[in-house]
Image 1 (spheres, helix red, strand yellow):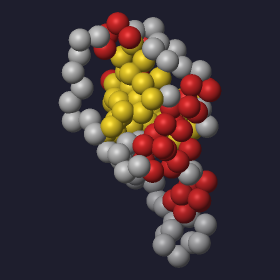
Image 2 (cartoon, rainbow, N blue to C red; image 1 turned 90 degrees about the vertical axis):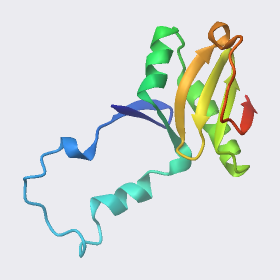
Image 3 (tube, rainbow, N blue to C red; image 1 turned 180 degrees about the vertical axis):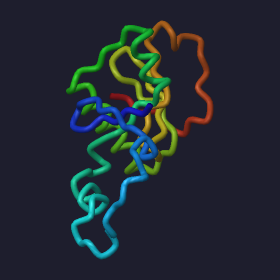
Length: 130
């Protein structure tokens, strides 16, 4: 199960296959108001990011809680890294380190101050300090 942060709120993203595909659907190619076009218009990728299942598990196991404002600040950090052309970053925010795929707008894992001590981050091309 994937999670997406939309306007600072955690939302569950279910795979498309989870829906019953046996139902007859209308031909959406000729329909100017099809769901995909409406969704793309409404969902601006710069306003959201995804927490991987691994990152969600680490947040829970390490008792790290992020408020809505924290989510907005992290999203802003991802936007700044994206503007600079970064691919994979460590975002240092408060007492946490978030290993993030900037290209996919996905937080891969989260570590608190104690867990990140004496660790080495590999395949990282940038660090974002928030």
